[in-house]
Length: 132
Image (cartoon, rainbow, N blue to C red):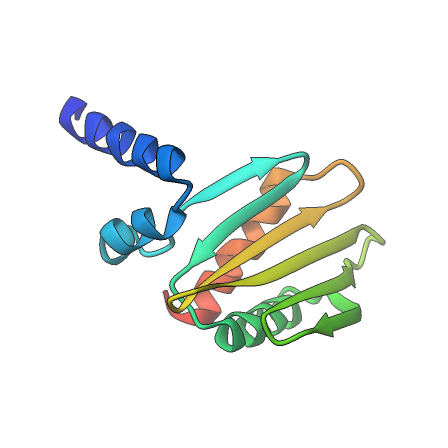
């Protein structure tokens, strides 16, 4: 277990040093399946080994599966934003960005200050829909 922790720490430090999260995804993507994630200021962001269009479609399908209504969306081809509302009136903001090399970043913020569990639930549904 210590060897795995050391390996993960080494790979994460390489990512920080070079600022290249694609290195982590490329090296471990097949084994991990989802890539990296971070929770900053209420937004849970993950990178997926998906082309941008597939990530966009999977996100829309995941919201439909979770019965979260989309109130607005803007797709600019390489980045986009989705505004949605849950049945209880909680606002959901999702941002997508093409990172290149068939990797997309998806950030989810649920509520005003962020709700990590609910954001993880949406990410899990995206993973399920995308077949990752």
